[in-house]
Image (tube, rainbow over all chains, first blue to last red; front, side, top):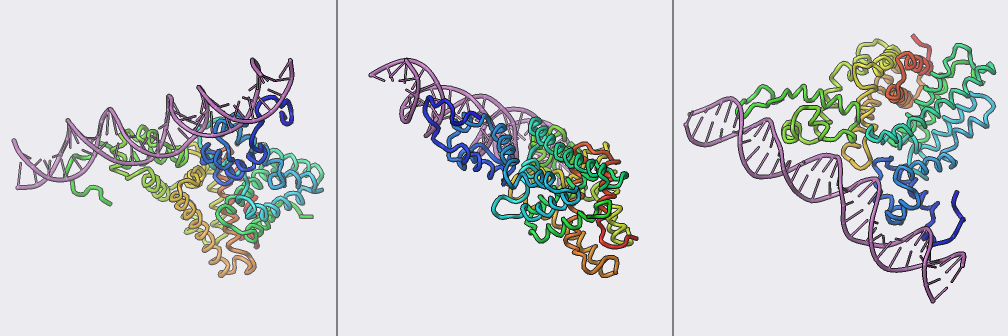
Length: 205
Length: 205
DNA sequence: CGGCTTCTTGAACGAGCGCTCTAAAATTGA
DNA sequence: TCAATTTTAGAGCGCTCGTTCAAGAAGCCG
């Protein structure tokens, strides 16, 4: 927001976006709590004072990282698939198949940032706990909304529990992220994805 | 091992098993790293010195907790189902259906201890990371072994990837544990379980 | 009883945490 | 040129963490 504005005072000596990217990578690898401010400043090439001036505190920095990740190709593939595919089945099939390839991609830390980071947050930090739980629930709500639309369109039997189906796919995706972190290959994860799709409760198309 | 033996010296003033149970509950609720030794000593009703004398350090205590949990009814239902059910499908069906009821049971912290605790361990502690990864892989190996037996018995098509199928069920179970922690009910989780079973790659029996 | 052994207590250790503060440096508008 | 503003570097704050230690207490054995 406040970039390229009012240029009074000493100019910032580092690239804010690059620093954010470095922080993203670190949080992605280690999770929220396991990443210390000291490691962050080192990876970002700045001193604590600069970090706190530019990003607020560790919590705000992490939230900005998550936000930024959600806009990146790797973080947005779920939303894109839901928007672009004509049927719900096609959307979920694409999500699972893409996840199987993206999650173990060595170009970035394994798995999904939000799932991995969420995974390493303790009960102590209630704020962060709530933030990440809301993120999870928002994802499930988006899944469920798409499935209900499909149900109204006749793609899905009326008896199918859209909430349960959303939770099911959420669980599978989370499991695939974890497996990728444990070293599973794209080939393995693709098999898992195909299996998971077999649970689709109607004739596929 | 060393219980009720050589009774020289001042006798222990607390019940070791009860203390272990208290520690189990705390680790189950909070995860490994989020549980501090201070909280442990308070819950166990002992002082740090006694904890370190009786259990080694925090790491050893946690490993003993996991071991103990694995022998408890709640922790052993997976192994029991695999042993008792005649077919692989029956075994996995029972595992998922029981998990759906056990995980959200308010008689104990939600979800599976090993999954939840594993969830809250950071990359920092390499020892613990390895310990928990081995635990996960051991579980998947057990799944896979049962599935291969089923394949040889003709319960499963030759083409079915037993490794992928094991990873798939592992992912679903992990997802159900997480959902239970997020407040999912037994009814919801049961729906998820039934959906997951629909992925079974052969005629069911 | 007097050793011997083991456990309990409570204080304290060093390390690491997230975060803040001060002073100097770099840029602006007047 | 100079005051105002903003960022930088780097030390250090208070706190919590897992762990240890010294001293005393409580039981055994001879």
